[in-house]
Length: 403
View 1 (spheres, rainbow, N blue to C red):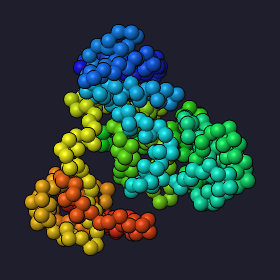
View 2: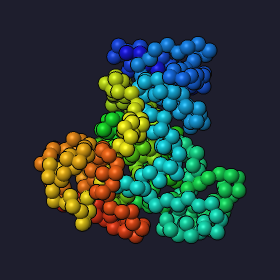
View 3: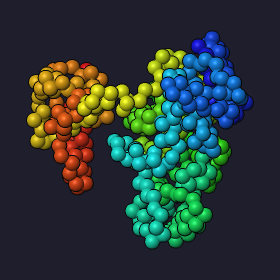
View 4: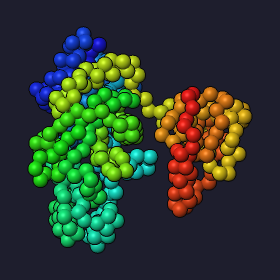
């Protein structure tokens, strides 16, 4: 297999380890400077040139895109995707995770915990936003910061207000975030590949420093994650649409709180702490999945006029509640159930005898006009919160049976 690593730092630890792991497994591998590509757009023939020459054949690419070149880097990855070449992370997933605000917006919709976060532009709303996250001390984060740069701990409201106003006057976008006191100076980094955590470590800040990043002198220790932390890490990565990621979590009093999802996690700290061949696990994943390039389901599922995919939430009342999929009549109306989600578990191609419960979410494909009859009318936000509570109530019911 021929693999390309997209990176501007060919001598970095992470890139060197990926190269060695690929060579050890018998693959051909080359490091290509992301900024040396030219994107060629012709009808029915997307193509790339590298240093002025047509790019040779590659089976897969592994993006190591720095924050400073996110726009151009994701454009190059997107072109590889249009050419049918597998990418270890999609351009869309990288874009989602790289934008801290977008990342938290997406996570906030799902069943994962995050620190309370505010984003405001009106200076009149700054103090109110600080109060909404629980008051001082608060964390102030630049949206574009990496490796702990642009993360500030403000001890009181007035200092926080002054810092935020100063940053905003310099045309910087900032997040205001609850300070999770019980995790001060510590966090957990999990490396997730596909649908599993392959390595995890705890990072501890030195001295009075509250940022635990290895680049800021933080120490590391290998840990085995509790199931709740492992599930949260995998779920956060999948919400972002990534396949390989470093997920940073705070250890809150009520469990894991997602702090960041990194699409190009450094390997030196995690491999040094855990002695696990993370680079090899990434190469193995790429080799196993290279036959399945990124696919835009929105286009594929709307090829037939009037057909598409939609989700049906089973609530009270619902004509589907208590029925099996076989008795629901969905199949008779040309509606195919692709997945059934119950709590944080998802069953693909659920069996026809499975009985539907309150809170179940059915991902269906069929004629949209027919599916619409099973979808409750959109209600105001107050009622949508009730729907969320229905799903939460379902979590406390009996465990999900095997498919």
